[in-house]
Image (tube, rainbow, N blue to C red; front, side):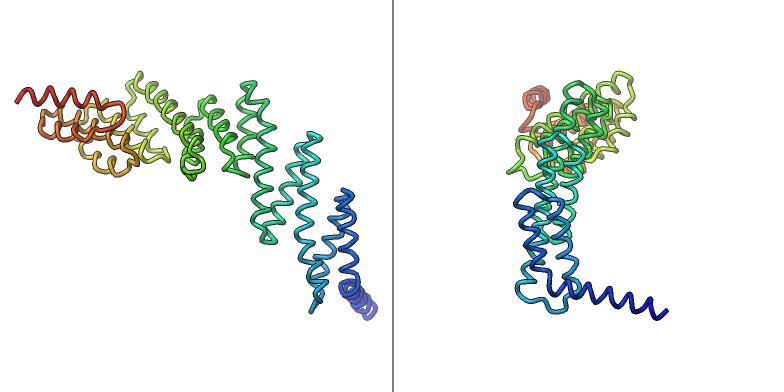
Length: 315
């Protein structure tokens, strides 16, 4: 038992000795290896320096600098290895290295480096998934793009392709979730992508609604709307479904919440138009005219004006 204790003490002493005398020298060796692209050896040396920092009670200025810079350089080395893997089209290795770089950057609280490497992960998956997407192999594209979207949800070109892959695979709700996330990004920076995402949501939602309408499945439309993350669109679809069911009282009941859910003049105008239609069907013509007068944008303006003209002519 005594011999074992002495051995452990001896090992601890050796670690402390390394920490006190070799930190700066090991750091310099790591720098030299990094400069010659010997990144594997450099990473091992920078890691030794970082680990040794735990054993130094009061590191001097040179040791402090070696430890701090090692944390930055080890991230850089993994990043460089990822870039080299991309150039060699070794995509799995690239993702592994960028992931390690991002994780270490997060650990060492380097937000800029973390975001940079996560962006690169997304770009690798975007390149990987492009061939499958262009070949209409949407199942493979989804498998690849979804990994990239998880790593970098701000890669909007890849996100839009992921959404399209879902839609083409009859996975409507999944595509809508991706588009909704795109639509929630900063409009000043991502205006074009947001517009394209909204266009996809409108088109594929209309397609889904049309299928259900052909089957007279208005309850199916309502159930579909309940699953949408886009509250404004869900409210409008629900109003339309109750129109199909001829439940005009329900349309009127839902109109206040539906109006509150809208974020654009076009959206509010669509709801006012549906409300006006409901009042007209109930022969509450004054309320119908009042609602139609609020239709000031979108595709229903001319129709609303025609309804107003027809109803006021009856007075």
